[in-house]
Image (cartoon, rainbow, N blue to C red; front, side):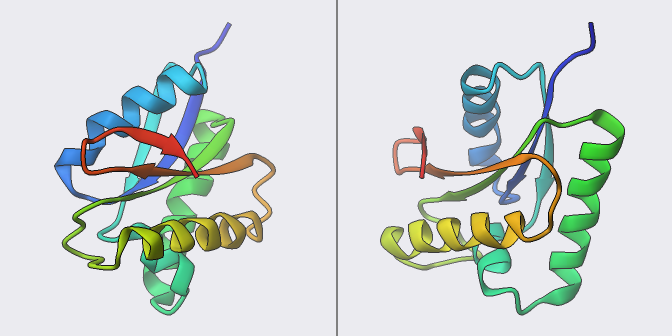
Length: 125
């Protein structure tokens, strides 16, 4: 039986990589997490203004789904983001908007949003 992959769109901030990977592997019973990083990814996808960045993210997510058979896509936002200095409440709104935008990519997998708080705890949005 193959190993289960999940694709996670996350900020490049090294502080959030491990918490997101640990959450995703436990919550989704994934063996591996394909990490697709972009500074302030929740803002980038929710605003949908930097079309080159969005296209690049979509290309990498699609690769994860097609090549590694990722069963879900996660979009993460986090407290104290250098690339997205929005309030925590605004981040949560951006994550929800990002989930909707990613669903419009019609990837054929479930899409979830997660928030990494000031204590590096991860929760579904």
